[in-house]
Image 1 (cartoon, helix red, strand yellow):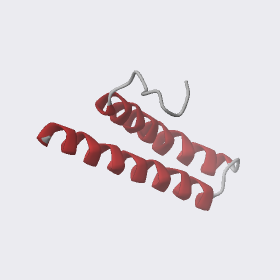
Image 2: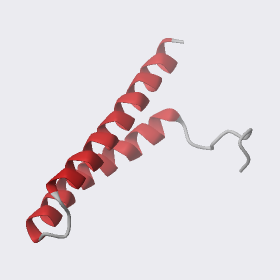
Image 3: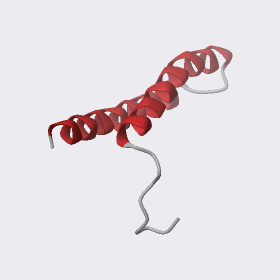
Length: 67
């Protein structure tokens, strides 16, 4: 897929996928921190980034619904 081609996925589908990934990270990163395979800072940054991406898609989906 080139930069000019549109993705076959809707913003809503992408929002749902990001929400699932965020839930997965929240569950699994805590375990990894407890096991010592990930630092608390790494976990918090990874979760924070995914929350920001989810917020972007939520805004995009809301904007598309009102357009």
